[in-house]
Image (cartoon, rainbow, N blue to C red; front, side):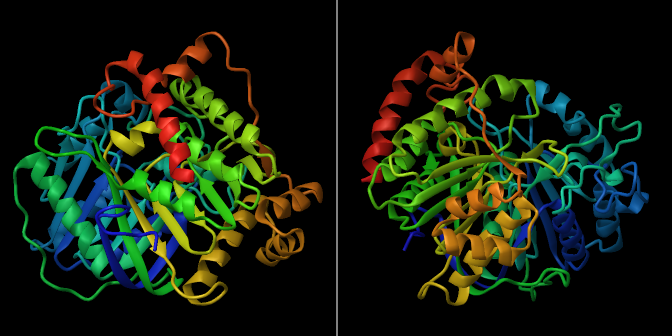
Length: 493
């Protein structure tokens, strides 16, 4: 059992139905449908929340005003005065807010005078961010994953090169005319007890931020969105958190513990999609398994390069060290690291935070494979753990979803991907067979030299603190990184 309450997860409950939603077009559509059916509460946790975001953008990123999320939420609360609508969003630092169209200022102005309660969360350790992303409806149904609310998040599973719905026109709320890049996100959807647990998480965060204790909503039947087919039934769901130590609140490292246990117990395949791969702890744990004669294969999917200059200078350079470490450990040819592109070779931003361990565990969440997501920021990951024998029930569904994701990257049919994996005897080998056959939308991640300033950034993990203890003391990080690597090697044994 990978999900253990109090160690690798905070809560472990059974969801009658659950699903993985791939990319934001389907997520926005499903979220709108579910929120429209709310009886008592609509509660949102977000790192970023842009009020002008359209659920269903039309060419030129236009659409009816009622389709913008702020107008939608205000209409919900106005039409049903008993409906409690609240948004808790990170009180971001000014440089971050500037990259997101100054959303904190826009949100305050947009919701002023409405019944929607909008609050910025700054009750965090110095240098930390509130990074959880969830929508909880009536404590009966909930979405949780890596997707924030913003117009640049929207894309379809096709990741089209020329999608006019991602083409910006000049609006008062966004001065730039630059088209949005293709972007990949995943969200999980659950009902019942896991949704109720996410409701508890929201109320705890709200109370910490505002001092206000919210009541639990009355019991309501889950309003499952009709357009989402449940992939899992009676599935075990775990919620794993991160929170840096702050005032009387101790640190929480369930996200880290689940990563370490999952890597240690993987038998055949560790598949990860993530925005960042920089954690020396996770690198050491993965390297330890790659060094085993009969260990699992490791397949990583990440963006070719980060979209922001800051992340290119910090996270991308540190990722080089992460991947180089795994390449050195890969004595048995079981490691692959790819970046996806569109049909014409344009970048696809991988913002998803997803891990699949064999066909046993499917993990979706907000946490990156970096230091701050393991010990500083607030994070929440939601994992589905399947019982029973391989190839049956929920385990078969996890395997099908991994195949679907890989086929979605390559632009081929699921059965082509499944046959290639079976014939080649592994996920990485199957991907290479299809890439050599002309399915080239996955490319090996390039590793530029890490020299000069880049070497200093990677050595001291600039921009990526381990915990509140080194948040403003980067000179400590080299020693912390070395001790963290030792811990990762021990965990892999």
